[in-house]
Image (cartoon, rainbow, N blue to C red; front, side, top):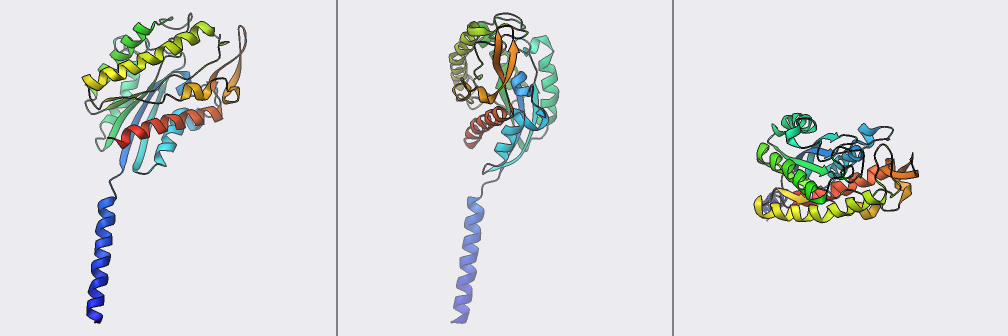
Length: 260
């Protein structure tokens, strides 16, 4: 009788071990290149290397089930537009690919490009290429994405909707209500562009965060209050806003990688 019980326990423990091992999927390691402007860069934050949205997105992802190590490079550049990121200009694109090339060599991790561009494109004056029409915005984004897909054959590209800024925004560049209207017009362009890649390059390009625009709309407490040519404006998230934006990006990225 003792021998039977002994073997029963052995079989039970072996079965539980095998079941646990079978259910525990290997963790996904992520290498993320964040492409963006001053919002991505973390402009006006006291410690952008610790507080910028990419940092917050990485911290969020590392806390999620099934995610292993998260490496990232913040390639946000203040004032930049999609024009600045065109591969043909050999400026910001070349700088970004230097960082991406280093992470791309680590084939045990998924290489992701997290893109939020459009804020500076929407300016009516003062930024490179402004004002960028919805059609030109689509063409610029497509050139960027096409080049990434070819250069990094296993990468994934996630495109986030740009967040809201106040219609009083007028610093070195002129935005105001006209600019905000242009920014809003880019959202359906992003949606149709992602749909285009669903057919052209299945499983490579995804719609990222779409909630940030409304999440930040009119919430002055999430922004730095800045003084411009027509008074106070709200453009750059403060520490609290950067954390919330990073988490929105993180949630969108996590949703994508769950299906990979």
